[in-house]
Length: 390
View 1 (cartoon, rainbow, N blue to C red):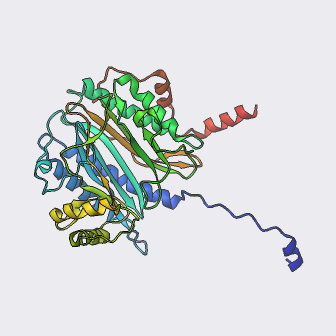
View 2 (cartoon, rainbow, N blue to C red):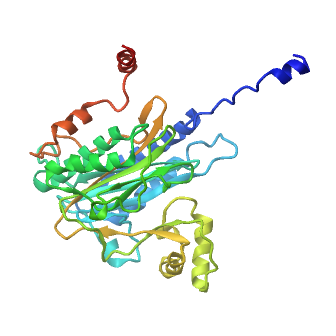
View 3 (cartoon, rainbow, N blue to C red):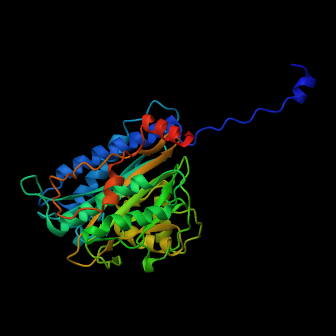
């Protein structure tokens, strides 16, 4: 082509690369498989008399061991490991219970028959995190299923999570999810846990600016801005439901053990704080970690206080509902691709109608929504296009 011809030729429009490439989605799915296998093993270990701290330690070990086996043929080897440390929260404990051996009371917590147990954990490959949570009841079986308020709250949380999955789609707004979760749990005489956030994710980020809030305090929107779901979005969606319809999460006797580094900089005053933070910088990446990973956990407990005070660390506090109440949780990671929503983490392993016998039923609207496939088939898409053209 001549120089003149080249001058008259408009430059070709740049080809847009997909935000979620096959390579990226494979990393998410590999991490999700590890999260699933770890959760299944923990569920099998969650028997009467099992210590919660042992389950937390085992979960973290399993994720580290499993992630160490994959992506070793890539140069450089990508970072991989925990995306969220194993938390095992029982009955009215809402979330983030992952005790230290030095916390005598918390470390002695054991499971009893009938306990409502929430597992939350996650793995990451190259900074792409697949986090999940599900709820079980210790000792339940098809011959001795869960009934009453425990069954109601677990079924409510499961139903709300499935409805949320089908509401997160390209072009929809985040507050549509807030509303559908509230609608899903109403028939179960339960309520979403107040003020819980679900956040957008990206590489090395699990707390993105685009967010979903459930049960905002005062019935408003909290501090969450209205946002549209877009192609390429990835969300970690946390659905927590309580038997207490007037729930207000509070901290309790269990001390915070899970933290995450921030991008804030500050010159710490105390030598103990500087030593602890230096160890955190070496051992903790972009994801939450527990103080169990640090050498001197007693010193770490003191050192993190100044770090939190000056914004170097974000605490994941252990929160509680009222004694005698029960909280259920389901957490999933979802991606919005051009072909439609893609569930990255696996469906819950334990939940089934044979194990959870609630006499309450969701509304017809929610039943109809949850009966739909998450991603429409090609035949359904063609039919919809034909209907639009007619």
